[in-house]
Length: 211
Image (cartoon, rainbow, N blue to C red; front, side, top):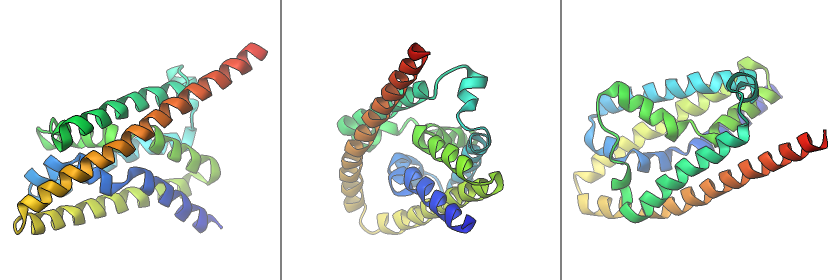
């Protein structure tokens, strides 16, 4: 039973991380970094994300209410706004919208972790895993999802390097089209995050008013 829950929550987090879409976000890193540096940067980003997810799996949304003195709804709304801006830039500028990702590996790792790996959806998945399983099992599910994400990103990097040398123009056209289509999905999910945040805020306001 516990193994089934681990697999279920690992798959949920993996789907939300979406390494195929993440590869589009990180296009300039896929294109410009050598394989060894890319592996180091992406792995470091995953470890930073894990360091964020584990406390949320342990404490849940109490981190917001008790530590930050803020509502989780506020996190959803702000995260939605961030991804809405990314989506809009993708629509109008294509993959060049996020080519601000540059600098030393340490800076790149933190930029990959937030906001691309750590967001309202993935944090919510970590909270959900911690609420339904023992902490150790939740951490195993989180680690498995992040490890699978890093592995697929590395495979996509290898595939890009192999194909790009043979048909660079085709790759560039595909990335441009895929990036703009993905932007529609990003924007839609961003609006949904904002709606969820507003709904949670209104629901908590009614409860407080009722009290």
